[in-house]
Image 1 (cartoon, rainbow, N blue to C red):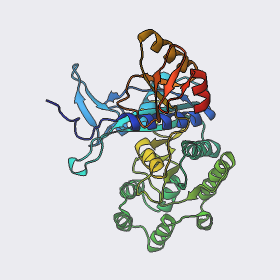
Image 2 (cartoon, rainbow, N blue to C red):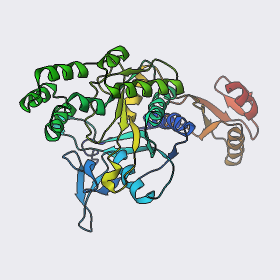
Image 3 (cartoon, helix red, strand yellow):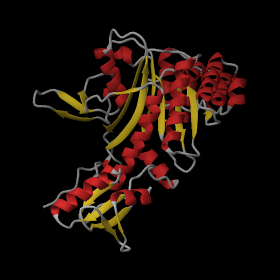
Image 4 (tube, rainbow, N blue to C red):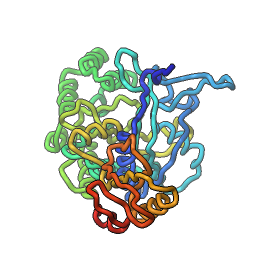
Length: 386
């Protein structure tokens, strides 16, 4: 009797798996170009391990020691815990990258996945516009190296949003921000009004949250607006192009962001492909008061956008399906073909994972016969394919 995987989990078959490996390779090359080194924290974390390990989206369970643990809901929190424990005395910047699955509980009615891949980086230590611009530029370059086209990166600033509600007390302002993170702008302004925020101040906040584009941001005449523009201009200097757009209405759902935030969007998709920003307070929750910024790419969404655009993995190798003719001759010919840089499967191929397959047969220890009847040496076949 065969059973399907649990709800929200799925088998990744060879063609998709090969394409995901190609995306990982391209993103990894971009991360390395900026000096980021890979790490791989465990899939399971303590359930009480910091503010991001709370809420109803955690997949929790008891281990044999009776401890309540959870599958990691994101990598950023795991990195924050890791840095606090492993690099407490580190000097200089930590540039860390990852490509790993995360797990989040979803309502059965939504039919969404509970496991998916994230790729991203975390820059721990430096603060200021240059550090934010580095991470922002790296996101833009990473998506471009992966083959994505036609996307924009919307850039906001959580600190600037806080300034729009500076008339409120701390508790009231946090209540407003909580509603804004959930996308409830109507409720947020009603909360602000109920907390005593004036009509003119509310009108200014509404105008601010509707601000998109450089001129509109400049017209606000708020000091942090200058910082937002500076970050974008520096990032464009690192990776040229008109890929960044200021958008003060961008307010991430996660509560730990403190400064510049951003999302990568595709016009035809109703959800972000990547998101990130500055989170200077998260590491302090683990006992390491260090500044940090980073981003996470939703790899399945990136894969979907790439595939819809006609993308296919670069540098795919041709697969030679080699019909055998005697063990010794087959072994010698297969070895000679592989020495020429060709991929060889001995016998019929049931699953090619989308690779181009060339059928050939062993003629003797020195030659193969192709489907059109020609007989060639391994070196001649390699030249022909290249």
